[in-house]
Length: 484
Image (cartoon, rainbow, N blue to C red; front, side):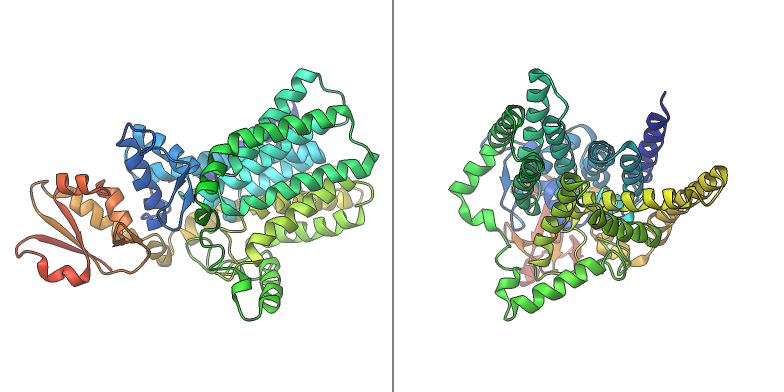
């Protein structure tokens, strides 16, 4: 087996470990947004009518594209309605993202860049964390990476057979079309496709027949795959925007100032102050561990310096980074925002890999090769060890994380499950939030754990959800639980 294949296998084993180890225990609890996905999935599984079952878009909780929820439903069907089951698809997509980044880095630069980028991603808290939470956004970098990898292969200069070209371009289009079903931030990606084609055109001042065919197949496949969602948005235009207009900087009194500050905060999250939400991050910690942050900054400088030599590669990576920042800095909510920034991950770690490769070559002629390789191994081991400690020790054991994932709501659900079905059980929902079927969102966690999302299930299991104004109607002598 080739050395690069062995190293890739090692990186993948590390990525698998970081994303599956203790998945049944960490994160604790189940955040209501995750539970809402699960309840939609349970509802989809409970019906055999396509129109009422699996959907391209679920309107509850401000609206969510349906692909990830439908995938979660398949896992629930086989493994049950448990929190870790909702998160298992995220872990799988996270692992495949690491693999995809290797191939993309290899295609753009070299095997070493691909390996370094994949390794940094495999142990990075930012990506590990969202690979273990049941949010649809984790699919966005996965599909973007693979879509652009297949597209770049189809557009490469070396001749491909017509059959292979069509296969790669079709795969790129399928992945890209599926991206429309993941997260609202993915909607900037079509601009990146245009920039990539422009970069190829600027390099040779022409697009040969092979590239035109690849582009045509890519666009056709993308449109076909995304068409059901596009039709849905044409029929329901309000769902296309969702909360975008509510949290846009243009809704503020001074959008230019806020845009500038958001940009500073978003760039600063890599080096100084990261997302303050315990659910998204070790509150306030930079998104990059300091050695990787130094590599990232070095990579930016190198990419600018060598731009003329690698116009397509560096232009593509920089354009990706800038476009992925747009949904973040144009928002009023929670800046810096690690979740909304997930599409920044691929270019960030490609640039960090460029910086790390340069550092290795810088010291190559200054130290004995055995000493240098030993030092490089120690640095990588240090980065991986810190990633493990930061997530599994420091963050997972922090008491703030329990509250961030509504662990107490899960306990209520488990207590309800332990009671006899014939015993009347009342859940008093005192917590506020977006209403779903007249009940605030926080109750979704209890509903998922007990499988009582629908009125039919509530009646079957004798579970009643009531609001504070209805508290006086709760009979005496029944089991009452409060969601606060």
